[in-house]
Image (cartoon, rainbow, N blue to C red; front, side, top):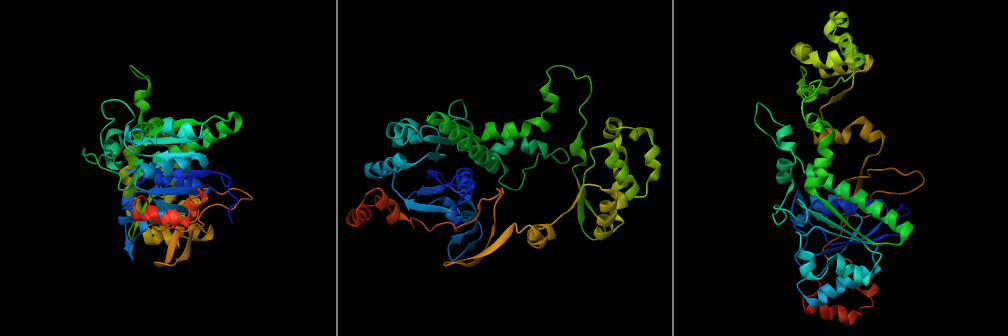
Length: 392
């Protein structure tokens, strides 16, 4: 069943790797029909991640609920097919380097000529112009440029976040931007070129908390406390836990949980502002107290005192977490090629609408015939295009 909020929307997906495919997967989960146009060898992510029977787990996660057709965009016939698909599409998304789609003949102006109401999305690394425009960008490169690596510094040495965070921030930004452009189109009938760069979207994401001191120019009246000094994972006697207290009332709960009633009347912790400035002074004592108790003991104490905490879970631990299980966040399904698989069900719940996982990621060009037949291409013509190497 597909009655998602975008069930009447068709997206032409010219993207590959991470950010673009993840953006269109989000909209596919919300009901959009997504036609993924791949090169003749397929998206490179078909060969990344854990593999079973030549199927990539990473590709599965990024391309669920989509259809696939392989088209050689180096041929005039291939470009013509893409423009025909654009005539019937509501959205096109691409993440080629700036200038490439225009040289190929499938840029915004070319698609607008055949479909004036199309919403055309472009993802770039650092923007369409400027000194970095022509560079090749991947997630860790943006982590460095957008401040993430420096923010993770440990003992003075910058560290990368060990996941494709910037790719996924960009994807979420683009999914929202395309949604906004579709809303605008519903009122005006106008198509729109929507541009999202990894650098800009990630700096936007980074700004509110990490750029507090840079928000004001000149001198500050009050220094910025460093909340990230206590963004720590602490060992218990048998595991690991993290917690955070951001208001003095939460700190008092922590003090009670650890049996430190002497902190309740300590002038250093008389209000939220003074607590934040002085918390680091007692953090080593908190660390010691936590290390002397089991994880279950700390959990019990923190629940009773209403201290915000999280037990550190590994990937297998997430699968059996009681909240994850209770909310049916992860499900298993059968795939004809690789057997039983797990998938995250959805990232948003809409009342009265069925959204989320419907079909596994498609094989390369698996829906070729159906897609071309909708364009009026006959079975004989399809075979000819295959023989000519125009489609896979």
